[in-house]
Length: 106
Image 1 (cartoon, one colour):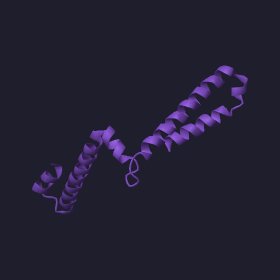
Image 2 (cartoon, one colour):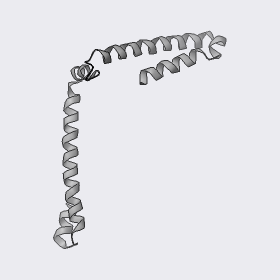
Image 3 (cartoon, helix red, strand yellow):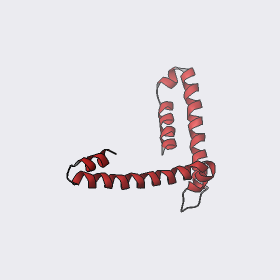
Image 4 (cartoon, one colour):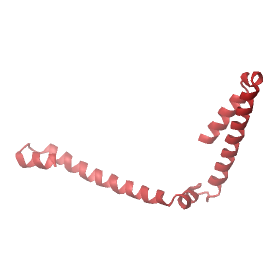
C-alpha cells in the first residue's frame, strides 16, 4: 500500500502544471516517478513470490531471519507483562498493609 501511494504521489506530481513550466522540475519528477514505479513492481514481485497462504511472509523470514525471533521475544514479553499485571491487580485489591505495599512496590 505504501509503494502504491508513492506511485500515486509521483503521478500527481507529473500532472502538476509546474512541470510544464520548469524543465528541471519535470526531469526530477520523472526520475522520481520511474523510481517509485520500479520500487512498486519490485515490492509486488517479492510479495507474490510467497505462497498464497503466507502472502510473502516466507520471503521476509528468509531475508530477515531475526524477525521471527523478535516476534517470539515480543510474545514472551507480552505474556510476562500480563502475568505481572495480574499480580499487581491482586495486590491492589488486598488490604494495604506493610507487606502488601512492599510487594506492590516491588
